[in-house]
Image (cartoon, rainbow, N blue to C red; front, side, top):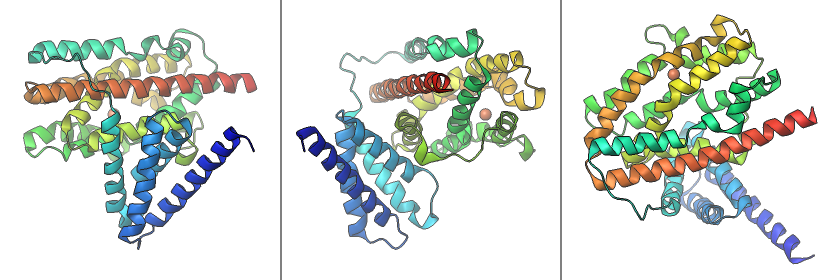
Length: 331
Ligand SMILES: [Fe+2]
């Protein structure tokens, strides 16, 4: 056996061992030693993955997603604790910004908005294909399937971040948003229920096969959850501000695409609504951010969080675009 084959075999042994330890650690009656052994293996893979090893990266993102998605409630504290230790390693690897200098709050907002505009998905080749071209229905369906994977439980990100704020007037920014997400007084009009109508129209299953997702999609989902659970609110505020502030434009473009495809009004309602509505939330969220933004440390972490989100977002969209093209070639 040559060196590369030996290396591959030892990696696969490592991944198998880490998976086995994780399975044991997530048994409801697992003891402390079983949990810490699994955690040590996972943290080693996290370091290896973030240092550039693609196999280890895929494995750690899978394991982290397993910790993030709902499981047996008796293992919830274990899963939260293990995930929080992974975040600490991720923090070490999230690039610092050596040339960073703090700005007055208004100028800081301009910098943040400029960064978000510069990283817009508008010019991504997949967006150009979908929103400026004449995409085949199977490409639209593929895009919407992954849209569901990203969006079906957006409300849970708001709920997680709301818990980070002690003052009710701060937390209420997210509770007001949640009230709308949940359909206000009409649960049938909750946003996931509306989006589900579109999935049904395109015959997209609502159940998500999480282990089967691409590692870069797992990384995208994991990073969102990590940011809103982070004890430093700069991470969660940066993430949700980046997502919310482009939501209106992105959803409007999808709505227009659905109109071009003659999708009826009811399955299109989620996008019609989000193409006009989310801007108010962005202003409210900025008012909350502005309360913290006079601190240099907050500004720095906020910009680090944006940088990491956009790096992961770009890798994820590149991979979706590749998969979409490969699917078309094999059809
Ligand atoms: Fe929504």
